Image (cartoon, rainbow, N blue to C red; front, side, top):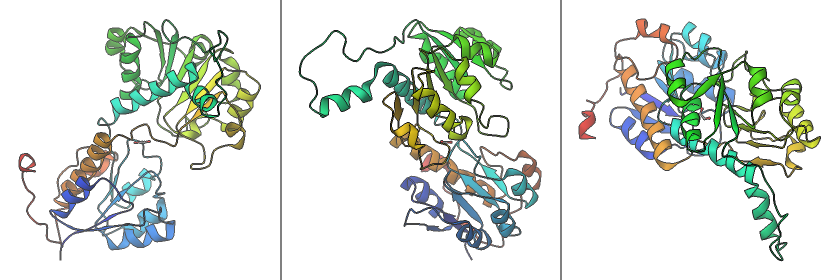
Length: 344
Ligand code: GLV
């Protein structure tokens, strides 16, 4: 019997092909996210699950996998959709795909930052609606990016990639991060550590780059929006619930801040109706890492993680490191020999 792997949605082909070199792979070709009941059923019947951020891998799913399921390989850097403690309790490794999406995500956060500041979404709608009937000196005035202050909430890989890009715009960069110890890199990037309040008060652009956890849920709410300059912009490419969306919709409506550019939402795929009505908001459907090359790399890293765990080896990017001491030897399934990486 070959090892069995279930992929919860359609993902880039090279990831599937890699898995098929050594295991029986089933893919949810409907591409419709599975319900918790469906995920529970899969967890009990497969040796590995390849999941996406649309899959809620809660304690009940993980308990259903106890004994057989060895790994949940999430194709995302974020893993707030998985109950990590429950995974460890059930003896299941969880992995993510950090690193490969850093630059792509930072590129996109900059796309949003520039778009909202220079009102590209409004300008395009205006033109397409046939409203452009002649150049005007007062038309579509936005905010300057060069020379402005950029506040980075979170100074991990993506936050630092943001700071690197800000160098080219002669920006002053502040960062807030209670965890990341990146003083040397911050110095090289000319970024200065600040407390959250100072960052919010002094920044022209506030860009969020923290994971979603208890401490960051609604990190940006009414009080924080009120602390920001009325000319400032908020950019969120991290996770929706880091921002209190209702407070943001109200704040934008009341012009407490100048605008917001959001790629992520509190209850995806729903968007707060208040945000949809406003012009000073640029909205995109969670696509910050969506390039062909990056999504392909994410899928192949997840596949490599699955193969490693099925072979009893450490995955490249394990989240619950406590599980590494308990990796199970392969079996009872049979794995086809894995081709050397350089022959792939
Ligand atoms: C995308 O949001 C990710 O976490 O990779």
